[in-house]
Image (cartoon, rainbow, N blue to C red; front, side, top):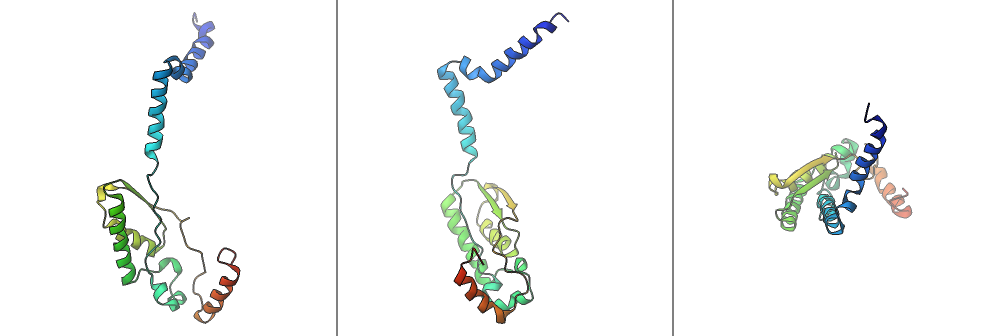
Length: 164
């Protein structure tokens, strides 16, 4: 009860101390703290972002497969698996021993491409692998007719991919 009248003053002093500590420590100390906080933030940002498209899929080899297999279930062809391994070698040469984080689409062909790339990296340097459904190709719909696909491709080229 004795401290009750001083409680607002004590709270104010604590808040001032907390939010003005850098100022009270002086210019050199305050700048050092600021630089330390800034370096912690910047250390979390990636040094580079590498975008990689999936390797050749069975849909690239045989367009008729779209009549029986949904787009998201298409697998890589043998050539696609080799392309993923080659991409893994190139990425390994680029990043060296740096830590790597991976965002990948839930489509089967992208999962297989990521597996091919990751097989070339040291597992300890991979900090995370996350599936993100927003990483996907333009949806053409499932079970497309091959006899209509040439006409669809021509129409799409006329108006542009974005608007078709």
